[in-house]
Amino acid sequence: MPETPNTCVFCDQQMRNVYRDIAANVLTVECPNCGSYKISRDAFDDFPAEFRRRRSPLPAKYLISGILRDNNERGLATPLLTIESSIRLVDPGRVPHGVMEQLEHYLQYVARHTEYLGELVMVGSEEFAIAFARNPIEMASLTNGLVELGWVTTRVVSNTQFEVVATIAGLEHASKTASASGMSEKAFVAMWFTLEMDDIYEHHIVPAVERAGYRPLVIRAKEHNNDVNAEIVAEIQQSRFIVADFTGQRGGVYFEAGYALGLRKPVIWTCNNDWFNKVVETKKDVKVGGETVSAVLTEERRTHFDVEHFSFILWTDGAELEEKLYNRIRPTIPQA
View 1: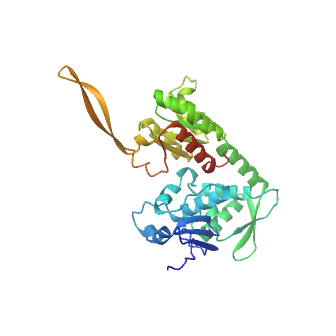
View 2: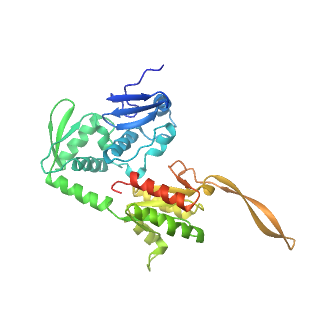
View 3: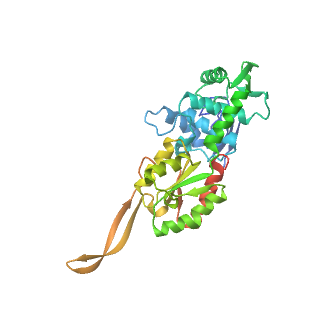
C-alpha cells in the first residue's frame, strides 16, 4: 500500500493533516497555505510529473494554490481535484495580474480579518497563497510593499509568524476597492437571440439570477440611442459577472465572454447539450430539379477549443439550466 504523502503538491508546504478514504481513493488535505481540499490519490501522484511537463495544460502551481486558499477564505466550493478539474479551476477573473493587484488582494485579506481599527492579524510565512505569491520570499516583499504604501504596519513575532495591522488609509482603500469592483448587482447575459432562447431567458435565466440576488440584463432589453457595441462594453464593465450561453455558437457571445475575462470579471459558461461539441442530423425539405424532397443534413456544432476547457453548465431544458445556474452562482460568486 502506498504511503500517505505529507507535502502539498501545489505549494510544497508540509501538510497539517491528510485523511485517506481508501474506498474512494480520495485524500482530504489540510494545508497551512492552500487550506482544505479533496484530491484523488491518482491525481496527487500524477501532479508532480504533470507540472514538470513543458507543454502541460495545467495552470501554474501558485495560481491553483491561490484559488484554493481564496475558496477556503470565502467559503466557496472547490470540486474534487483531478488533473482535468484543476485545468478548469483557475478563473482568469479571480487571478491578480501584476504586483499591484497582488497587493490589493493581500490588503483585502487583511481587511476581511480586521473587525476594528488596530486589530492584529496574524500571518504565517508559509501562507503566501493569500497574496498569490510563489514562495515566502515573494510574500515578504509584498508585505514590505503594503508597508511602503502606508496600508499596513507589521511586527515580526517569530521566524514563521508576523503581525499585520491595517492603517486607516489601508482600510479606507480596501473599502473603496471592494465597493467599486465587487458590489455591483448587475449580471450581464450574453446569448443567442431566438424565440426559443427568449423563452429560456425570461422564464429560467432571469429567475435563477434574481434568486441569487442579482439583476440580469441582456443588451437588447435596455433602451439606448448609442452604438450597440459601446453599450455592451459599458454594461459588462458595470456588471459583477456575466452569464455566457453558447447555444447556437454565436460570435457575439465569444466576444462578450472574452471582453469580460479581459476585465477579470467572473464568467459563468453555459450551453445547451445539443450545441456542445456535437454532430447533429436534421431533416429539411429542399428543392431538387423543381421538386421538393426531404434531405438529411449533418451539422457539426463545435465549441471553440479556447473556451471548451472551462467548467460549462450543460443543460437540456430551461428547468435544468435554472437550477444549475442558481447553484453555480451561489458558491462561486463572492458575496452572492
